[in-house]
Length: 444
Image 1 (cartoon, rainbow, N blue to C red):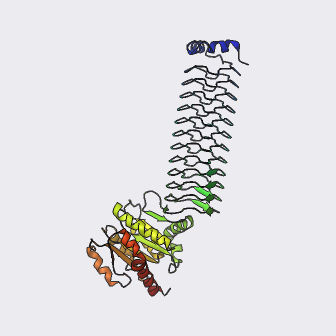
Image 2 (image 1 turned 90 degrees about the horizontal axis):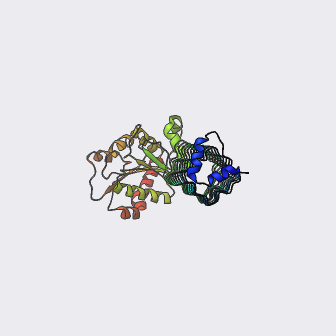
Image 3 (image 1 turned 180 degrees about the horizontal axis):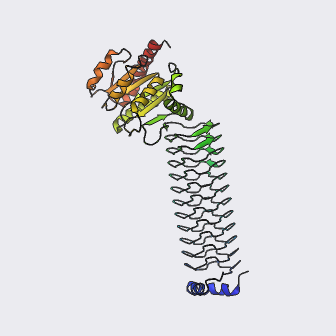
């Protein structure tokens, strides 16, 4: 039980309490199981205090010093702990339901088994904190720093972790049903065997994260960075992976069901952006780009891959995206190459490799910039590859394009007035002639 002297002192107010602490620096306050509900003690010096099982319901401790304090099993329901110092404090089993911990410093604190449901932890420092088995249902944790924190088997259902930092955090077996992790930093986080159901991870950084045997269902992973992530025996169902960066992923034994896998970026930052439409194809394409021996043994004559070349200015990208979507609906595998991004390697070599795998090439030569060099590389080398040029009707072919017309595998340039007209006649005027030429050239 609490020592009566200490109990009486704390009730004399913060000024008297802190003055006593200053004059008795070696004294460890004993307020075990003390009833401090509704106490108004902002800024109180409770560092190292014994507060096991104490009742702080509705108490105001804003800015208090609770470093190294033993608060195990304490009751903080609806308490105000904003900006408190709880570094290395023991809060195991504590009840922090609806507590306000905004900008609190909980670095290294033990919160195992604690109830933090509906707690306000915006901007809190939880680095190295132990939150294993903690309940964080509907907790507000935007901008919180949970780097190196242990959240093993924690319940984070409906928690808001937008822009939170979970770098190197341990999240094995954690549950994230209906949580928000938009733009969160989960670099190298251990999410193995965790459940992310109905979770919004759009724009999050999961580079190097471990998702082994994790369950992801109805989860938004659009624009997520999965570079070097481990997806071994991961279950992904009804999820959106559109626009993910997947360079260097380790994907083995994936269980995919009703997954949107469009515009997956298979190249690292600093290289031309190459996008494909599913994880298996993505890894295959990148392997071919990097392995010359494998490329030599690939027979691409029966491939459904179509290489789309063009400029990625806003006006031109609308056209290229429309072509890509149309080809997808026709069961092709469109690969769209972005020449506008800075290149860290030989663009022409990459285009040539992709062209060797393609059934045919669709090249929008409107406002041509890099395309002349790419066509110069592939047209003379690949007489079995049909090239279907496109050109906005109001524009003119660039000067050097004329000499490509002597190659019979280069089809007549198709002129179009706009994207709607182009898509309306794409089958008849673009795809059909290219397919017919491919069959003529290859016999298949």
